[in-house]
Length: 409
Figure 1 (spheres, rainbow, N blue to C red):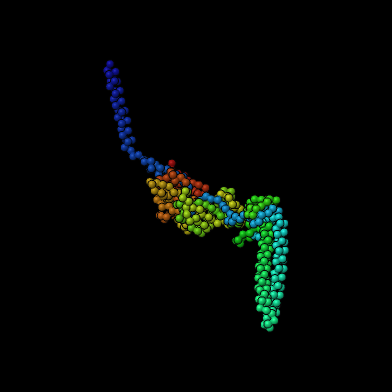
Figure 2: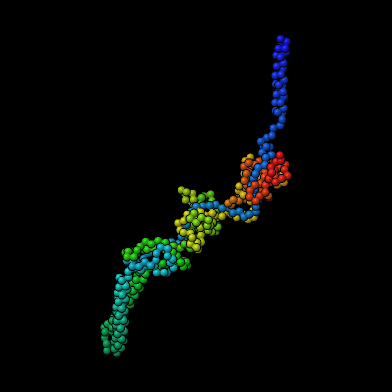
């Protein structure tokens, strides 16, 4: 009985001792310093890729969609009515300035020229006859005058002779005018006849152009000014783009533009701003800008959709980094600069400037070295890093003397 009683006393004591030990261990665990998440991240090296801080030329640009148009678009049409007898060119054919491209039926106009020439011959004959009549009247006046002075001819005969001279002079003037009239009629008929020979003409000095469209076929009856073909100047094209109100003030004549077309991937063409609309369309708040694009090889075609990247400013030899290096921490933009000695990164707040493709201008502060371009979303100020990527040996993690190893075990 005494033994059983002693056992009952020993069991609670053991439980009390065990509880005391557990309480002591829990208290020690709570008193032990806990590593913060930031400290844990700083202790574990992060694999990153880097790029150097550069000195480069940064172009401040903006891209605008648009389309191409020919620099000149001429519609060739006859000045006289007639049947189209021959069409000597087809779509796509090169055309020289002054080249014969079409012929109208000229039979009727040829007859008009012949008739005008015959009428001119009649007028010339009348003119010559009036000249002879005037000479005869003048001689008769001289004879009557001599007789009148000798009192042989009467005064009425003298007056009649003078009247004949005046009449002959008037008739000569009429016939002379008729000659000029008929000469003009001949020239007009010849001009109309020549207009049956339709030639490609334009005012500027470009010697060659190309046929763009065909509007009539041989045998068609044409009225004056009915279109036959169109002739395009595609040696130089116009990139026509619409510029928003925000960028309008920055567009200046003479600015350079890079032109790319979806139809010609990988190709880029140079252009220059040469026309700027003096107003913005009220409904769209956009203005038309025209860019002259040389096209000597003829690769670009009117109607192609293009994108024009216009250069506003050029910053030579300016501090720049890859755009992938820019991150935001605590509301500030910056980059993670690699400290190769400490094998850690430092967050450097920066003021970015112009962007040019993959490069960003850094206005301040001055930088040099390597900045993190891949993996920076895992970084904080002071994080340990190791480099990864082709051709780049990894940095050893902090606290090791080896490359690529990480922490010592």
